[in-house]
Image 1 (cartoon, helix red, strand yellow):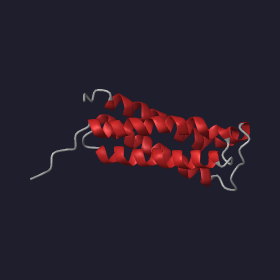
Image 2 (cartoon, rainbow, N blue to C red):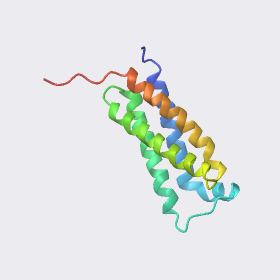
Image 3 (tube, rainbow, N blue to C red):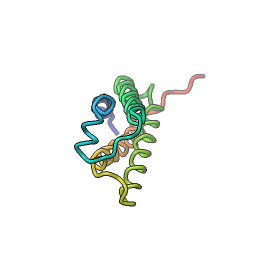
Image 4 (cartoon, rainbow, N blue to C red):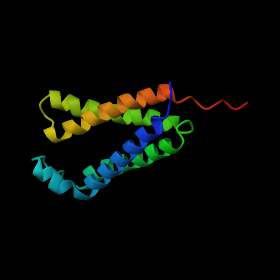
Length: 129
């Protein structure tokens, strides 16, 4: 399978997560208020996950630049996207998740599937002798 699509995918994932991390890290209060989501009792409860999303975005940039060398980052990306989807969809089906998170989980589900396809497409680096 050709792999020309892998780097552009991870550029898009990088921009998406960096922008999302920055926006939620800085401006989560008006967003939460707009969608009727309760604010946490401390800003760090939102800012830490936002920072981690931003860090993953940087990792996805590394993948875009050198997919073979950064296959393990792709694996972590699959796990991160799966974890987010599991939490959001799990709570949504229990009727306890604000709807504002569903579009993000749907996007992450698509990214997770694409990341799995990327893992199948990008060869593992050759083992050192």
